[in-house]
Amino acid sequence: MKNKNLIAVLPGDGIGPEVMKEALKVLNFVNNHYHLNIETKVSEVGGQAIDLYGEALPDKTLELCQKSKAILFGSVGGSKWDKLPPEKRPERASLLFLRKHFNLFANLRPCKVLKDLSPLKEERIQNGVDLMCVRELTGGLYFGEKGKKFNKHGEKGAFDTLNYFEKEVQRIATLAFKLARKRKKKVTSIDKANVLTSMVLWRETVKKVSKNFEDVSLEHIYVDNMSMQLMLNPSPYDVLLCPNSFGDILSDQCAGLSGSLGLLPSASLGENNFGLYEPAGGIAPDLVGKNKANPLAQIHSLSLLLRYSFENDKAASLIEKAIDKVLEKGIRTRDLFTSKTQTLVGTKEMGDEVVKEMEKLC
Ligand code: IPM
Ligand code: MN
Image 1 (spheres, rainbow, N blue to C red):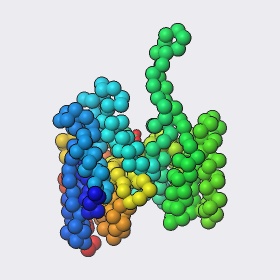
Image 2 (image 1 turned 45 degrees about the vertical axis):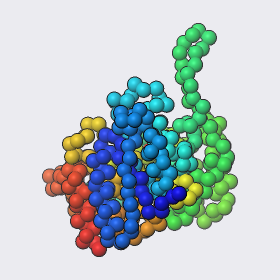
Image 3 (image 1 turned 45 degrees about the horizontal axis):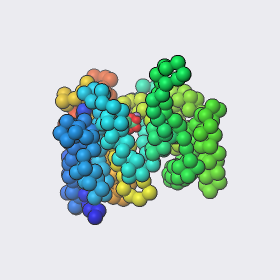
Image 4 (image 1 turned 135 degrees about the horizontal axis):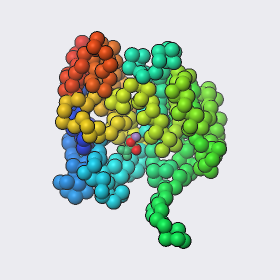
């Protein structure tokens, strides 16, 4: 039985637990302020779960996810577990498993660029940059047939395959067009149709879907070119519709554009309101335990959870406004600190600042 007020909290490895703590502070605030009655239950995942239970996704964690309305996820992985066989490693055995198990085919990664945070020159972003990366999440290169092989000379090799079915492309494209309708009404579909057969199918299918959305403009662009355009002239773009692996790479590039991977949240959604919400950045091993990690991507992932799984735009917007305010005031964790006029803070203090701004905005 689903508990419609329950969030499964899976902090995981690396900086996951530290940034999660700050997101929970923020959740506590909105929970009290709006009387949301949200409950949270924490469980182990990733390397931490391997150490305790011998597997990255123990049954009790999966059961908790199953009965929850949404999952708030930290990050998983680390060099300690790198030597395990690929299918047992924290990333594949927990995160990728959860994406597939719950059919979370759509990964949304919003990226707004503030001028004084971006590494790009001001003239390249003066028209503003507001992107929504829509990444297909349960197909493509990540989930195709894979394995090891030997050629006739006995040389060792390995392979991964890139497959898409029309239906998989249709559903992610439909979601991208619907999102674009509420934004600047422009979809840029990313592929590599000049080389890859699966990408020819991708392009043809997106074209077909676009017939149902005549109010939204569509353009196709090769992934290599898109990568360059993001550096040269990112302003004209709105919704970027990406196959799984290209979306993985381009969304990190979007994070770079906005100044730090520590700012990029994500929402992984299926057919209903259930979703998994996680920062797009990883475990940041060099920052662990130092109160240096940026918690904003985790806090922003919480706001996406409230928006998409709890359909609570009010609470989500309050959090997002508070994040913007904190950044506007020049409060920065180390990843974003560039000038002495700014205030350098740690993970915990950044969480406190967001809560303070929320108090003021209420
Ligand atoms: C992401 C991450 C994951 C991915 C890793 C941790 C498996 O990089 O969410 O972008 O490659 O999808
Ligand atoms: Mn990634």
